Length: 208
Image 1 (cartoon, rainbow, N blue to C red):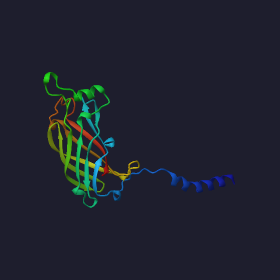
Image 2: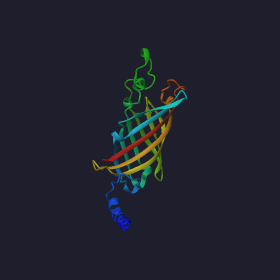
Image 3: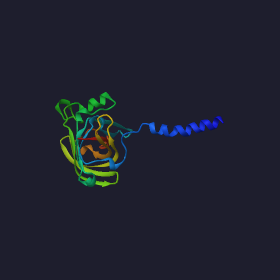
Image 4: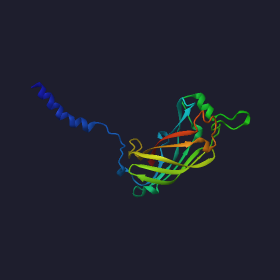
């Protein structure tokens, strides 16, 4: 009898628990996306980079505070436009010494090893978008260290919904690509520090 009462209580309570369980505001649901202009949420947009060190292991860092816009129409996603600016001067790593090395001036007035103390912002401007379901290849011009080269981002739609704090429509994406830093005039220590740099991007856009 006691077991039956416990079972009956669980049956009654389960729907109530399910109804009160908190739900995350974002979901991979393209029907939630509306057209218009979106701006990055800089505090939740990160560009991670990874290089091989002496062939032993990889080390990595992050560019944050990226700003820019996404303009799109859901029924014509191939016409979407992305324009992102990345403050290279705000690069960070887990090592104070390494971060300082990335931004220090060259010795005796020579060129800097990496970015130097006052690097210009990097900028990516899309030129073509090819969509396949919830993924896309976004090709554009990346300007870094004063050099502009074409880059293609393998992009995945990761969620859409209403931001619970500011009530703005928000969409999220992740993207990856690999580039050669020598293409952008950053040649220090190749091949001991790999020429190839892997980028891992996570970006949130809020509708304006």
